[in-house]
Amino acid sequence: DGYDETLVPLDYQSAGQIRDDDLFNTLVGPMRKGVTLTCIMDCCHSGTILDLPYTFKADGEQTEMTASPDFNMQPLLQLAAALASGASLTEALSSQDPQQLMSMAQQCCTIL
Image (tube, rainbow, N blue to C red):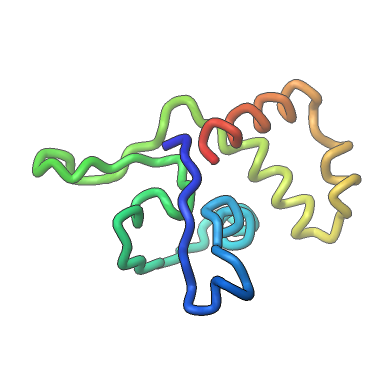
């Protein structure tokens, strides 16, 4: 949605809030293709707290999530695969096409 959302844990005063960017980068981004993750969030922004590139409008008409047409997940998946295979961040980024990196940065800034 273009906004930052946070979860406020019990220890937020000493540990801080948990940003949606961090949840995406820790939980969603590194997931391999085919992995399923079920998250149950009891909060008013539960639809956007993981920064997923999908939309669902609970209007009684829409029955499933739809992919956001302007989000290209491929560069992020390639980066995550490189990191999962043991490459350093520098190595993983250096193997990316500069145009794709710019596109990925723009998309992440839009979503995050």
